[in-house]
Each structure stands twice: as C-alpha cells, then as structure tokens.
Length: 328
Length: 288
Image 1 (cartoon, one colour):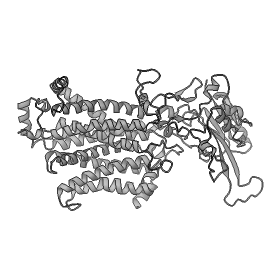
Image 2 (cartoon, each protein chain N blue to C red):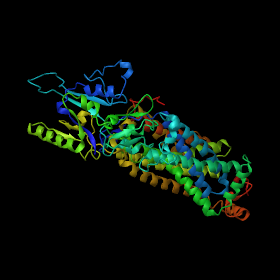
Image 3 (cartoon, one colour):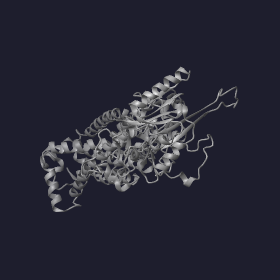
Image 4 (cartoon, each protein chain N blue to C red):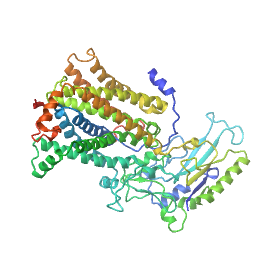
C-alpha cells in the first residue's frame, strides 16, 4: 500500500470538521447508482440516436426503455428516504404558498429535485415513444402525437435530444456535487466527485446496455456492441484519470475511503474490479476467460459491480461508524 | 436588529442550568427515557448537541496523563463551554434547505419550521458546527433562539437561567462590544482570550464566544467553510466531464459511420432525412 501512504502524505489543507453525518444510507446509495444508470442510458441512447446508424436502433430503444422505469425507481427511493415521505412535494412546491414553486439555484439538492423531475418528463416521453414505435401502445391520440413529433424537422429532434441529454448529464453529475455541498471534510473537499460520478454513470450504463444487448443475442463483435464497448473504455479511462487527480488533491482527507476496511473495498472493488479488470479484459486476450464473448460480458459485469461499490464507499465511509453499515 | 448570544466561557461553572432550562421550556424529553449511558471519559454525559439537546455544556478536562499536581492549577485546567446553534450570518443549513423549512426570522435567528421540514437531512451535514440533528420524528431539530419567547419580549430560557451570566442575550452589536472588552481584559491578565465568531467565521456568528484556547480544543472548527464553497467548482468540473463524455461517445459512435454509409444513404432515400420518422418503426437490423 505504498501508493496509499504517498497519497496520505500529500496532505491538502482541509477545513477542520465537526459536522455530523446526515444518515444517508442504502436508499441514497441505491439512488446514486440507479440515478446514474437512468441518466446514463438516456444520454447514451440520445447520442446514439443522433450520430449512430440505423443498426443501432435496438440499443437506442433499449436505452429509452430503461431510463424511465429507473428514474421512477429513483423517485421512489428518494421519497422513502425522507423523514416525512408524504412531504416529498415540499421539494418542488412552497408548502406554505402553493402552487408557487420551491427552487433554490444555490442548493444542489433543490436543483437536483427539479432536474430529476424534468428528466423524468423527458424519459417518459421517450419511453412512450418507443412503446408506440414498437406497436405495444396503440392508443390513437398517442400514435398521432408520436407521428407528429417524428415528422418535425431535424433541428427539433436535435434540440429535444440535446435538452434531454443535458438533463441526463446533470442528473448523473449533481449527486456528486450534492456531497460536495456539505461540511463533511472528505465530501466537502472532493470537488471532482460530480465529474467522477458522471464518468461512472456513463461507464456503468454502457456496461448495462452491452449486457442486455448480448442477452438479446448480440455478439461482442456486433457493430453496436463494439461502439458501446469503445465508448465504455473511454469512460473508464476518464474515470481513472478523474479519480487519480481527486485522490492526489484530497490527500489525507480521503482517508475514510482509502484506508481501513473501506479502503479494501475501494482498492479491490472499485479500482481493481471496477476499473482495471474491465480495461484488461478489453485490451488483452490473455486476461480472463479465453472466449472474447465471455470476456466482454465479464468486463461489463465488473464495471457495474465497481460502479455500485464506488457509491457505497463514497456515501458510507465518512459517515461510519456514526452511521451503521446497514443503515437504510 | 440581530439578536443573539454572547457566551463568556471563562465564567461558565458547568452547572448545566441552561440545558435544563432549555429542556423545560421547549419540552424536550430525556433521551432513552432518562436511562443515560455514561460517556466514560468525562464528567459530561450529554456528549453532544442533538435533536433533544439544543444546549450542551461541554467539559474540556485538560488533565495531564501523569495526574500530577504541582501547585495551584498547574498542568491541569477545566474549560467549560455552553454550546448552542450559532445562528450564523451565512448559515449553511439555511443555504442548502430545499424545502424552505429553514428561515431567517425577524430577529436574524435561524429557525426550522417543523410543519415544512420533510426530513431530507441535507442541513445536518451542511452545518459546519454539527448542530442540526434529526429527531425520531424524522425531522431536523435545533435551537430556535426561543423564537416563541422572543416574540413576546422575553429572553431565551438558557440565558435567563444562567447563574453566572456566562450566557448573555441581546443585540449582537452590543454583545460584541462586551465580548471585545472581556477579551481585552483577559489579555491584560495574561490569558489569551479572544472572540470566536467575528466576520472571519462564516460571515459572523450571532451566537459567539470568548475562548481561551484554540477553537478545535472546544470542538469548534478552526476554519469553517460554507458547504456551498466548492459547489460551483464541482458543477463546472462536472460540465467538463460531461463534455468529455459526449465527445467520447460521439467519436466512438461515429467511427463506424463510413462502414455504414451505404446503409445510411439507403435509409435517407427511403425514409427522408430522419431515420426515426420511419412510420413502420422497423428494427434497424431488418433494414438493407
């Protein structure tokens, strides 16, 4: 662990911390993970739709089909996490002056609530669009609306796609900024956490799409799967770079995450399994199973496991032992 | 008209009358039905501020390891400090609260409206002083500066109960003058007294202290920052990452474009420029 020691020595100058843990437990960890997947599969689908070719349409539809149910799940997780769940609408509406909106541009959690809400709208429209396209929804007004929307000129589609992807990117990144906006030293000083979560959201979503496409009979050599894998590699490389810079800048402040039991999960689960192994599977035929097919599947599975463990150690490590590991 | 507390820690005797008065006025129940666990390392058994303890007298028992006493007070000293919400001029909890439950009152105090709070707990980790806590009802709780008493021209219960006037209530500017005078007096006596809570501490604290040791000795942050300090940078760096990912995605997705160019051209002539305008919505796989 000499790398750890080295990083601990490059001590940043953090604020001294006596802040209390917010008791964000498994609902929040799951929200961070599935929120990344919802947002990621949506912006990947959008990019693929805008610049891909017709052979990618399956993946595009899959991305849109995943995004909406996942974002609904996220909403439920957030509501369950509240101390008073039935007051979830206080995030969006001034409870004393309805229907005036409740919005604070300087509060990440307030901005995030709105972004989740708006993103859910985009995801819903795209979800319904796919169902109509696939003939699974035949309600006439919907079919007519779908035909109308799809006959708009190209700039309209482009604008819609870019807006939706923007909110997707925002949703994937703000969860990292959310922890930066606290007084817990590790979180507060991790200015790159949003960027890290974004890269991880993209990479886990690529992995999820690859896994599902392969389950549907696509092979690793299929052109869409290849494109997704190529993009995933870039996302993983970005994630490694961002993580490395973040750790160097944090120095000893990152101690809760990189030392002790959480350190084992972080170095083994996040860094080796989640980041280095997938790259090794992609780049070297000698690592892992002999069949390229199984290597691709394994790489994607590793990315998903690593992405989940990343959320776990980031959320839990600075709160422990004040907040037990199994805290919901 | 900012109202607040000036707590002179040098004359606190650790009687905890302020804690009791606070519990009584605000009808805060005992923890665990009064079955208190001992902290084991201090005569103080409250531990810290919490949803049920809005005042907490900290005991800082500076006793040398050897327990040797060489003359009066030599080598050992007990510092006592009645901790409370600082009602910050720039309050982190108020800043992050997404529901508008946390407000600044007409007395410039920071108040949590219990009928609005939905228990998201953002304020808890936002507070640089570890003051706000979540209660068993799932909502955030802390000192109200006895908002109800203030509205009727009374002073907060803790300040009224304090037998040594260690806790004083009043106009912040008046109190600050008192504190400055006290710090100067201490300095003249050869004690390093100073005011904690001027503008350098998150824009100023409406509940401030005269201390005689480093802030962290009292469990106060030496250099607190507002939670929002790094949020702008965080968003900017996220935007940069998003741009990098978008470029990475587009590059990866277009790399096959040339191979699929003929297909694309076909699709163009058949369906017009927009692929998905294709009314039959057939799968891309099926196309020529």
